[in-house]
Length: 137
Image (tube, rainbow, N blue to C red; front, side, top):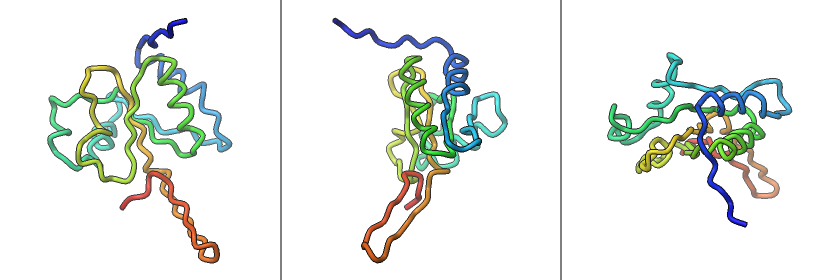
């Protein structure tokens, strides 16, 4: 049986899915920035290292999602798959190639900005550390 490619509906379908699928153990919802929000372009350009990817001609995500809990990343993945949306992940701030900020194949995409998932825990006795993906270099 052949699998069919998900069909992108509209950004609102994805956003509605996000609003109903976030099953976090916290009461906080992920922060979702869309081009209609005043904070969208500031958030989009905040960590772009190469100015070429912040030019007006660069493809832009229809949403930037900044999860406040790890379980909210699952909701982004679920809704993206369900609605045919590509995901770009922005983490530690070292994306010089622009892979986490643009899409080069003209498909709708969303950016997961992991800036809120940036804790670092060190266990000196066990000589180990746990670093979340949003931690900066």
